[in-house]
Each structure stands twice: as C-alpha cells, then as structure tokens.
Amino acid sequence: MSQEIRNICIIAHVDHGKTTLVDHLLKQAGTYQAHQQVEALVMDSEDQERERGITISAKNASFRLGDVKVNIVDTPGHADFGGEVERIMGMVDGTILLVDAAEGPLPQTRFVLQKAIQNNLKIILCINKVDRSEVRNSTMITDTVDKVFDLFVELGASEEQCDFPIVYACAKDGWVTNEDSKIEAILDGTEKSDMKDLYGQIIKLPAPAVQDSSEFSMLISNIQYSGFVGFLAVGRVLSGKIVKNQRIIRHGVDSNQEPKKQHFNVSKMYVFEGIQQKEVTELSSGEIGLIAGCEDYEIGDTLAAEDGKVQDRIAIEKPTMRMIFSVNTTPNSGKEGKAIQSRELHQRLLREVKNNVALQLANTDQSDQYYLLGRGELQFGIIIETMRREGLEFMVGRPSVLMKETDSGKEEPAELLTIDVPEEFSSEVTSLYQQRKGQLVSYENMEQQTAEQRVKLTIKIPTRGVLGTQSIFKTLTRGTGILNSITDGYIPHCGFMAHRRTGSLIADRTGKATAYSLFSIQQRGMLFIGEGHHVYEGMIIGEGAKENDLNVNPCKPKKLTNIRTSSSDGITVLQGIKKMSLEKCLEWIDDDEWIEITPDNVRLRKKILAANQRSVRKEDRG
Image 1 (cartoon, rainbow, N blue to C red):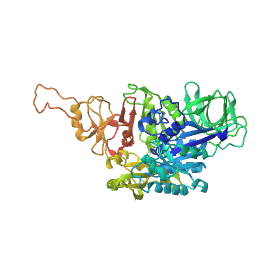
Image 2: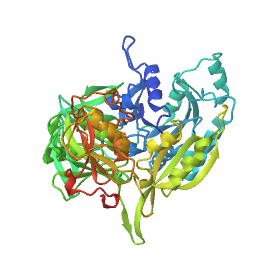
Image 3: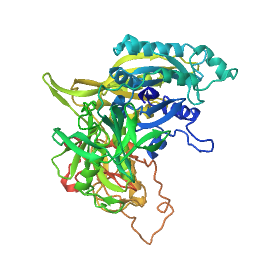
Image 4: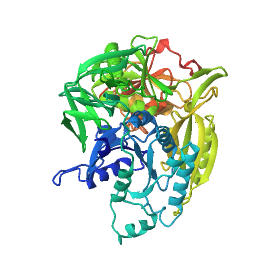
C-alpha cells in the first residue's frame, strides 16, 4: 500500500496562498461530486480562520491522482503558530514550499524551510502570484528563485535538496506551469493551463518511508474530537498494520515526564477521503489515519503493538512569551457569561495545552491564576476569543517575555522584523523600533512599477520591543505598511524599556456613566466608553493625557434647577471615543491592569479596584 501513497504538506509565509492552492488541488483532482457545493478556502473551516483570513491549525485532506492517493496537510503561515508546522513534519515525506513572487522569502518562509530541511523532506518550490502587475515584465520571479536558493544553502540543505523542482502558479486562478516562459501566454489567454504540472511533481515525490518492523507503530501528531466516538489520534503509520478491535498500547508520559503505558482496544479507525473521514477496518504502514478508543491521547504519544517501536516524542521550540489567566473577580462576575472557578479555568487551559504542543501551562503564586506559555500575541488572542465564544468569563494580564539565565547573565528572546513600507515612512518606522532597542540589519529598495517607492527593512529587536506596537505601526504608515516577524534566538538583556507613557482614567465609583460627567472628563484624555455604560470602581474608562493615573467620577448627573438659559442647556457632545478591541487591549494594558473578558464585552480594569489602596503615580505601577 505504501507505494500507492504520497504524504505531503504545504508550507509558506502567511498570506502567500497556501489554502487557495489546496482548494484547486482538491477540485481539479475530482475530489468533489459535480453537484457538491464547496466554499472557497475549504480547509479554513474554523470561524476565526474565515474571519481573520489566516490558517490557525493544521488540517488534513486527500485526493487521488490515478492509482495514487495523496494525503495533504495545510499548515499555518503565521509565526505564532509555528508549533503546528513542527509537529506535522513527521507525517510527510515531501512538501510544497510556496513563495510570493513579489515579496520573496519572508521570515516564516525561513522557519518552515528550515524545519523541512531538518526532516530531510523532498521540496517542490512553487512561485505563486506570478500574475501580479509588478511581477510581469520584471526580474522579480528570477530574483525570488535566486533568494530561495540562497536560503537553501544558508540553512545547510544537501545537494539533493538544493536540486529542487520549480513550478510557477497563480493559485487564485487555479493554474501551474513548469516553464516560466509560458506565464505571459497563459495570462494573455493564448494558452490554457491547470494544475497538471504540479500533480506531476507530486507523483515524483518519494513514497512513505517505512520503518524496519512488522509490528504496528504510530506517532500521534494531532488530536481531533468526535461527538460519536470521542477523541481521535491523528498520525502516520510508521510500521506494521493495525485492525479494528486490536489491543494496543499508548506510550505517553506523566506529569513528571516519566514514561507511562496505557492499554486499550481500537474501537474505530478512519482515513481522509477529500475533506471527509472514511471509516476503515485496517490501517497499513504509510497511511495517515485516525484511531479511536482512548480518551487520554496527547500529541507526541506513540501508539504501538506489544512489540512495536516507541517513537521519539515530537520536539518543539520552547515558548518565548507568557500570559496570566485569572478567574473573574470584578463586581460584574457572572452577569454576562459563565463565571468559571479556578478548577474549571485550569481544566480549560489544560485542554488547550493538550491540543497544542507549542503551549505550556504553569502555576502562579495565586491559586486562581495560571500562566499560559506560548509564541505570541496573536496566538493568545485566538485562545482568548475561542474561550469567550464558549460563554466563559475570565481575566487576562499583559503578555510578557520569558527570560533565560545563562552563565554570561540574563538573556531575552529576540525577533527578526521584516517591514515593507513606503519610503516616506521608513525613517519614522526605523525610529520607532530603534527607540525599543532594535538594530537595523538591512535597508533594501524594492523594485516597483508604480509611482510609490517602497522599501524593505530588516530589524533585529528584543521581543519586548515588538509588544504593543502594531497600532502605532499602522498609524505611522497610514495603514500601508506590512509587518512580519519571527523569533530569532536569544540576546543579552537590553535593560529597561518603557511600555506606555500615558496613564489611565479610572472610575472611582459604581454606576451608569452620564454624558454630563464624561464631557468634562474627555478634556483629560481619550475616552473608551460612552453615555449609559455601566462602570464600577477600578474600571478603566479612558487613556489619560499625562503619565500618571487619574481617578474620576463618570456618573455625576447634572444638577437640576428651575433656572434655564440658552447657554447652559446646549447639547452635550462627546468626541473621540476610542473603541478598544481585544487586540488593542492586549497592546495597551500595563502590568498593574487586567482585561476582563465576557461573551458580551471586553473591559479594562486595575488589578487593585479600590482607589484608596492604589497609587496613581507611574513609578508605583506593577
């Protein structure tokens, strides 16, 4: 069976067209029935994936090319979800590396390519978006291929890996060609094309490598849940075969990372057929399948027969950031959602960690608070939004980086920023990140066919220097800048770094905000709330113009008298209310503040609610 299977994944930087390409690979291979209605970006099945336009978790599907079955895995392209890429590498033998013809290899391209080379995968280079106006009649395609080749050499690829096949694609329109000389003819409509050239390269990829053993062994790379059969272990059968109802062993680890065995009977087995799952009674070596029968699966466990080989656990790069999660202790607790207790919060976070090996959970010195360790603000934001949509109430603190103690002193994680901006904004952007201890590595003028000249900046900066800068960056570049980053090892600690230079406007009592009171408060800063908003003591209602905090009364009503004048009875107008989304709150908060998360609202508050128990001076924060 292994000779009739190809296991591949598709990897790229975010928004280079992976999921769109997978759509056409499935459609043109005849995966769907003629009458079947299929949405675009079918692999982005989660609500937040469709809303944000990104892939968050790795997905499996399959299609057939004649007698060959192709299992394909679509992976995330954002650096925060690099753990999803790392854990699926052991499932595949080849990969399609997708690169935007205009943007070239970006930070996440480097990360995913490095993992593919380390796993000795056969790589197909696919240059996508060759239809872009700035690409046509330019040297961009050739330059991009050269840059990718240089990246292969830099990352230590073997001669065989460097001899990679190249295809040129317009995933949006569903075509691929092996010859760059045909691109213009295809775009002009004088020549037709489809996905056949890419299918031909996929067939040439190696068949699944099978370990020298007749006993069943499978490494769990993913976990799914079914309401009918419970948890399903997803992985590739590395040796032997397994049949339904067979008794096998789960080789896992306990809380102390000590080996642990668990025997169970296989109740159901499935394989991927298109985007669906098909029940089977047998799985053979080389196949990617799903196995039910145990409720305690963890990613990295080995499922094996009695004498089957126990595989090495999946190695994932360690987290670089952490965020504190707490039960909701505000006066509003339980009014807008389910106010979970510490045990329920712990169990919910454990479930998240179980399904994502890039996350870790740690205790704090408070019994109702926990640290979630991960890769970045976006990853934390996705988890928070998921829990919020489940109807849960809780609080989170400001993200912070994880320091490392070495013989030479304290070190902190660093990031490599790749910034694409119009030239007129380059000095302001460079200044922003240099103030946060960043170092400009390269300044490159980009080839353009438009009047606007753009430049590509590469900056190495401590991770602390990137936190909370997304909104500032968008403002500086008038929304025209593109910012990408990826973790780049550790550097010596860079010393103190200011987070926010402004203070908070804080409600000093509970009640409903009045327009009369807010009108006078808005002279002191920028408001986050409007008239009629329910507030409580310690809730943050705006950003102060000065660096110290300010306690204010937003509930003061206008005194009623029997005297009326035209000047005193005018309409009260509130100006410039700033709507704070979850992402903006994560960027804005300081160490002495919480974000209150409920299904209906996202609020900001001080950790100490009582005004007479907290200082308003900036130097006393934290």
